[in-house]
Structure formats: structure tokens, C-alpha cells
Image (cartoon, rainbow, N blue to C red; front, top):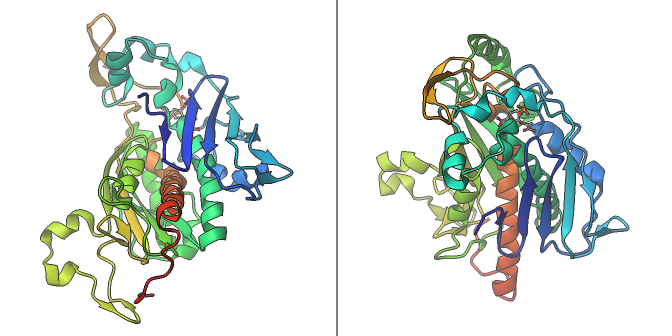
Length: 362
Ligand code: EPS
């Protein structure tokens, strides 16, 4: 009912608020015997964290994971894995004004309408802080997928505002704060973000995720399609307003002769489908893309109302992201990995005995 859990066999439940004492998650359904240590969470949590560069919120959290259950002598036991991260850098006084008003374009208003009460501190449950636990759970999924199936899930930033990469190299994506695939443009982005931050405004972004090594057969028609679950998972990330799989909305302008991915015994000729047909993986790379809106917590005054229904101008001070997309790449990877792991286990449960079917296109 309250939708803080997702997945069917590999389930993740997150809890906690931005300025509460801690955030956490419970992962259920993880196969036993997977080696797991707290150190393994650091890399991805650091990639997502605030305060690493001047281009993101300056809140500084250690984001140190505590494993409370489900791991014994360094291996998962098959019982629920509870992970906890304590919040340490809350500055709730920044939210004194916001508690009385609604930021235009923010979930402040809809949470209030739904529950009749809200925790305004740091955005409460609607804060991007919650995505920390998605990334933590995603570490477990990524590891199992890599070890058991050789699946690799990677993402990159594909657009900020109107800027798109002029070239593409996976090798540079992790070498800059934007997850940008073109090294020559990083200085352009730095200047762009500096000017944007100075102006007090924010901007949207596009993040792409690619999963290599997924075998054919994962995904459940009709109501458990792999692409539908990936879309729902990406859409559940804060600020996401659009999702595409494969060519997505470009398909509107294509002809069938162009869109179909022709097949031969040495491979598919293209991947317009994004690795999914009929809701089931083809064995090609799974390619998904998401659009993030510009954040609503900005310094440019905007018209709104206060709790008394009076007209007010809202200016959001404090520590905020001028482009939330900059930190979204590891979150998108985590969500895709979580969906893939759930579907891997679901496929194994129903169709594990089917084995490899001929002909198989590599
Ligand atoms: C956020 C506002 C900021 C960000 C936060 C997301 O929080 P605060 O106002 O408490 O500094 O720092 O992001 C995180 C803390 C995080 O770990 O992602 C918001 O409005 O969503």
C-alpha cells in the first residue's frame, strides 16, 4: 500500500528521512553465499554523494554503511540484509521558511495534500537522500549479477541542458565529476555549471544506462515486462520525468525496415530495441535513458502560497543541487541492476530448467 518496497523475489524496502537520525534498507531474497563487506559499498556511495565537488550540494555525509543482519562471516546467509547509514550533517534551520510554504515544482505540496502532515526538513522522505539506499542495495545486485552472470551495468550523463557529448569514450566517464563521456568538454561543463550556480537557477539532464551481458529470456510478459519494470524503477527516482528504452520516442519517426534489428547467426545488425522485445531480454545490451527535471530548490523567486493560503514569493536558500542529474548516474545504474537481479531470480524460478535454446544469436 505505502510503496516503500519494490521487487518480487529480490525485494528492497527503504526507510528514513533526509534529516532523521538515519536512513536504511532491508534487502530480502538475496541468494546465500555471496561475499559481502562494508568496504564494497564505498565506491558507488561516493559516486552518488553530495559535497564531492562544487557542482553539487555541499552537505557532507560520510555515508558509511552498517550491515545489521543477513551476513555471517563475510557472506550473505539468505536472510534479510538490513543496511543502515546514519545522517550526520543535517542543518534543519535552513528549512524554517520552507515549512510554512510550498516550493513551486517540489513535492512539498503533494505530500501535504496526501498526508496532511509533512517533515519539511531536507525534503523529508521526498529528499534525494533516500536514493543513497537504492545505491547501497544496487551494490549487492551489481555484484551478484557480475559474479553469477557476467552482467555489467554502467551509466553516463548524456545531456545537461542543451549540451550533448561530441564524442563517446567509456574510459573517461569515471574521470570527471559529471560522468561525461567526452573529456574535451569537461571544462565547458565546469564553466556552464559555475555560471548556472551564480545565476541561482537549475537545469535538467539526461542519464543513460547500459547493461551488458544480460542473457536472453529475462522479463515476464505480460504485466511483468522487463522494460516496464525498468521504466517504473527509473521513473521512481526523484526528479525523473521521462524514460526511454532503446530508441524510445525516436521510434515514432522510424519505419519498420529501419527500426527492426536484423538477425544473423553472428549477431544482431543493430539495437534499436534496447535489448528487449516483448518485455523479454534479447541477449543484446539493455539500453535505457531517463530525463531529470531541473531542481525546484532555486534562488530565483517564484510565486507560491503559504500554509494560510496567502500569496508569497519563494526563494530557496541552503544547500541544493543546481543539476540533480550530476549525481544520478549511480542511482540509475542501481535501479537497473535491482530490476535485473529480481528478473534473473524470477526467470530461474519458472524457467530455470529450460536451459539454452537453439538457435542462440550471440
Ligand atoms: C536535498 C537537499 C539537500 C541535499 C540532499 C537533497 O539536503 P540538505 O538541505 O539537508 O543539505 O544535500 O541530498 C543529500 C543529502 C543526499 O545525500 O543526496 C533535496 O532537496 O532533495
